[in-house]
Image (cartoon, rainbow, N blue to C red; front, side, top):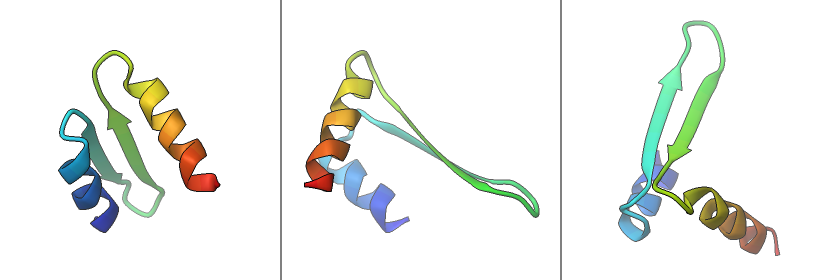
Length: 49
């Protein structure tokens, strides 16, 4: 949840969906307008460095 709250502050154009399956996995979906996929990929690459 802290990640989602932080990201909402800097990237209000992104939509976050957190889904808990009973007895199963947890899913975090991040959606946004055109160009969001590239933006998220670039942010992930920067975080790895």
